[in-house]
Length: 157
Length: 157
Image (cartoon, rainbow over all chains, first blue to last red):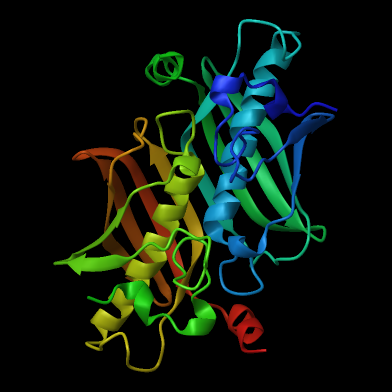
């Protein structure tokens, strides 16, 4: 099954968190499960914070790219279109909020769940949780915006 | 000159963002410049968002670890102690807020600047900026807390 990120065009598929063409990235892959978007990701050893726990920046990366992916998928869904039909939706992050409720353990699959909280014009607000062994350890919120022309122009040069 | 992170004990020096013993991490290094803490970091190619710009998760990692490092250094400074004197201060992130004001270009050194906004018991709030070519592209805020016993116990086992 294709993930949201599999529909990103090649020239926009190099992101550290979610780019399938980034050789050293996290390669997160996100899918709908009903009204929720879901990413499953097992951190590597070098994603550590202190030994035994996942680093805050890596968790922020998951929240970030899960949020922009969800925003894009939701934009297509709102228009009743498949993600491989033009015009393209691709979002970047305007702001990110992450609350680390408790330490997130290493060595297990993390489940990121997202839900669209609000849509305002070109902005989509996505609220998210990260769970380890069924327990929510992190809450996050992303304000995603359609990729600005200044970033798209660069990628077309 | 030793950076804040050079004083972290070996068992707490594996963090993805700031651990000097993490072979695949960012290895950020932070210093005082007066009342400001400063980290200089040049992203690698795989830290991309879309081509030409730095990924949001990497910027969040910088904000995160710059914040916890600043909190630790500020705690020693408030006690008039050097960072190599016991007892140890080591902070983790309770919450993180990042505002991406404009795209952050790749290929240049980024300068992260932090300032302690508030100290409340075991909590230190650090406000930060990231600048590229002298222009602030990101604002961030970290609420850092002294590392909880649950995380320290694991590292001592």
